Image (cartoon, rainbow over all chains, first blue to last red; front, side, top):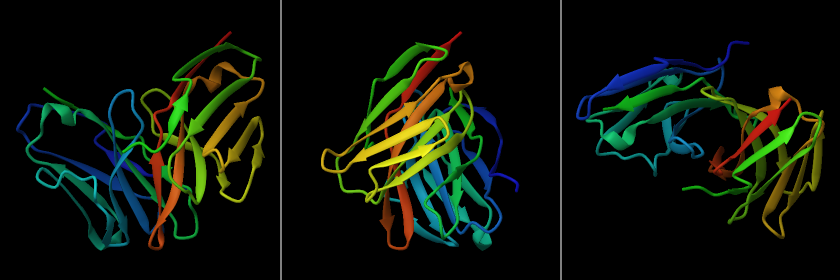
Length: 113
Length: 113
């Protein structure tokens, strides 16, 4: 089966610019997660979707970050405007309703200059 | 926020030796999982142990869980150069009907020939 797809793989922007990341989960997986992983740290959950609905966005900086999951499949994560501290790898993961295991995409490495 | 603290932060061993990584956490959990991350790549699920289990094996991996001490350990036996990666523990809990993972800080394992 195809894995979680993410694009782009790399992105370099200047501070105050906006950026968007895209994720396509494994087919049939109802739950989709976005994580932020700063260099040298573990992934931190930003937002969790169950189908179309948001389950947990308690750690999403809502003044600058937004995310949506259209039709319960693909998802986009947007940052506007970006700050230097947003430099990180953004990971997307998905899981089925019957499993606690999450499957991760390759991530998008964002550098904010 | 990081739930798990891993020890050691970095570990260097020779091929054929065993590697042991420890994870401590703070709150009650439903399960504990271990993931591997190769440099610049996404995370790969290794093994899951539920809160009512004490030990689990998968190939060269052995995981133990002590819920009274809120700690877990991952043992990799007969290590190989290909095991070089960062290893993360993640505690699993439920948010309504959806499962959620909180990752630790990771252990960087270097296996030399």
